[in-house]
Length: 206
Image 1: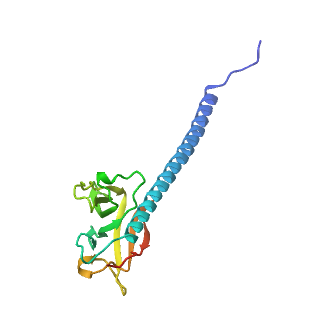
Image 2 (image 1 turned 120 degrees about the vertical axis):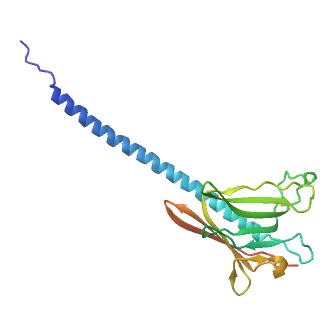
Image 3 (image 1 turned 90 degrees about the vertical axis):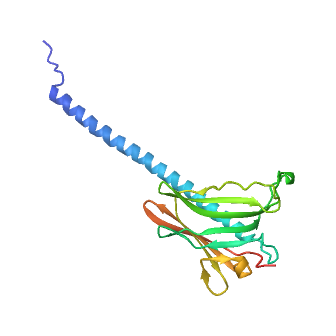
């Protein structure tokens, strides 16, 4: 007679339990790594979006245009807040480089009036950008489109040569500010983080 014996029910149950514990640990580790990778990718994309936005504003402020005799040229900063958070508005006339494919017959001169402001919808704050060509009257004003999403605050400060102020109107001040500082606050892993850029208009006024 054969003396070989099979597994008992208790041994099978223990093996199944151990296998379940091991599979659960591997499952949790795998999806933990996937979630961490997704958060890192989202953070990198947010940083790229933030860097591109601040660089665009810096270049536009550096190329700002103003002339006391031309009321179309403007640089206006309004101090506002949204539920206690800075929510500045920025409107300026600036010179943008034309692309090699730009068609002047379609109303592209490179001299545009740009506006930035924060909007809020469904408890989400977004920085929007709007532009219109200053030279071609027939050009339609572009609709404000999201420039940067998931933003907490947007603060624009102007230096008048002696102090920083949160409001500016070139028609009243008679010149562009000496320097402009733009600060954006975003949420990263549940905590607020601020990023700033400093720009100096090349022409203070004509």
